[in-house]
Each structure stands twice: as structure tokens, then as C-alpha cells.
Image (cartoon, rainbow, N blue to C red; front, side, top):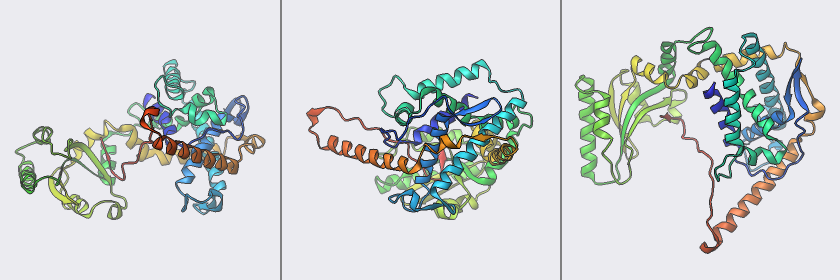
Length: 385
């Protein structure tokens, strides 16, 4: 459950827009959706709406134009946002109903305490960070209680996934199945690399060493641990971390997203064997995963691969279940949260934030210390740990 909560609370970090003026306040006592005695508060709806708005900005062809002049997946952007929020909330409510049937809701006191702790840490932490859930959602009328409920609802599908397919679930998925999923869908390996930015002699020495590693590893004379230990203290002027314990590259669309030399190296190497290659001034040494290495890796990343393996299936199942539950939507409330007004506020406040940064950048050093926060950037198509 703690992994689910951690994932849910991390979502708000993607909303690094400058939101300082609210178009309307949220009455947290009002409900946006309900079925029976279960109600989803207005503030939870507002957070999901902000998330969908942010996602839409990244999906339109021209982010400099108004969202509402464009389409997403064949729909007007406004319809796409509204449909996305509606489907997601209904699916979360269906997951809650399913978990109730399994006897897992109400949550244990330990899990409730974990939600409370995560909400407090994200809402208004004691650190000096300016990027908090309160600073992002608060100006739009969302309060702490709604944010805590958002963490709860946003984690329900993942909680159901674990309850059904986790190690102690009703239909557990084995590590072997997850390892096979990894090997079928990813190029996975241990890796050493070296940037050819120093002398040609050093590059030649490293290339020779990598070739020797390939021969020695494939003949069974050395292990990955031997190679890792020999590499981890060697650095050059640019590379201070030449070893990555695990690296995975999605096979889907690999021809367009992955350097050809790396892709061909993986395609032409048996699982569990090593190869070396280069691309754009970087020398690489890979030890591709065999079944045992894949199993060892997925045991440390079960939640991620379980979500990939069964996530779409269980989400679709809960979406279907939601259609049979008689869920009510408070349309008169939802109409208050006008998307065009939201876009105006975001554009206005983004402009203000940019102006503020410009003023800070030209101010004399004696005027004080400027602290800038930045959002986490995507690492591309590969993931390493």
C-alpha cells in the first residue's frame, strides 16, 4: 500500500504550472460524484481536472495555441478533458466498490495513517521548497482534506491490482511471468559506458578492456560483479558514474527511439551474454539479462511491471463495472469549473511567473539569493535504476 501511496502523491509534481489565481472556489462539502453512501468531493474532481488539463497541453499539436482550437484523439480538447476526468473518477469508484467486496475497505489504520502522513508531507512540507501540493492546488480552492481524498482515490486501482495479482493476491502473478514480460517487451541489461572525450589512448584502452570483458564474460571466466567492481572507481573528466546496474529500453518502436548500434547489438546477442558497441562518442559494454537476471530485477520493481502487465486489463474491467453501478454526477457543480477560464488563468499566471524570473535574473547580486525550482524531466525512452 505504501508504494501505491508514494506513486499517487508523486503525480502532483507534474503540475508545475504557475497557478496563483483561482477562477472559482471549491466547496469541499459538495459532491461531484456519488453512488449510495459514497461521495467523491468537489475538490477531488478539481484536482483530476487540473491533471487532465496538464496532460492535454502535452498532447495537442501546437501548445502555443489555445487548447480549445485543437483536438486530441479525434475529440475537441474540452471534450477529451471532460471525458478523461469522468472515466477516471468512475473507474476509481468501481475499484473502491470491488475492494469493499474483497473486505479491503475500509482501509486498515496503518494504511490510513500512511495516507495522512503522505498528504501532510506533500501538502505543506516543513522544507523551503516552493513546489508543494498546497501551492499548486490551493489557489484553485482545493483544501487539504480534498488532497488527502485525492491520494486515496488515485491509489485505488493500483491497490486493487496488488490485491488481485500481487504476491499475496487472490490470483498472484509469479516472478517468472513478470520476468518473461520484461524480456518480451524490453531490452534489459547491466551496462558500463565511457564518453570518448579525453585522449585517444584512454579510449583505446577502454575499448580493449570492453572487448576483453566480452570474451571473458561469455566464456564464463568473470561475472558481472567482477566487472562492476573493476569499473566503479575508474572515472574520466566527464564520466564520474560509468556503471549502471540495470538499464531497460522498450522494444516497441525501438527502430525510431533507440540508436541502431545498440538495438542491433541486443538483437544479435543471446540472452545472458555480453557485447560491446559505440554510438556518438560513447563506448558501451552490456551484459544482457537471462531469465534469472530478469527475475532478480523484477522482484525489485514488481509494482511497475505488474501495472504494465495487468494494469490496462484491470482498468478496463473497472471501467465496465462503473457503467453498471448507477453512479450519479453533479453536473450543476461541474459546470462551475469552466475550462476556458482555467486556461486563461494558467496563461496569465505563467506569464507573471516568467516576468518574475526575468526580473530576478537581471537584479544585482546584492539584492538577495534567487532560488529556482525545476520540474523533473523525462529521461527519454530508457529507464535505469
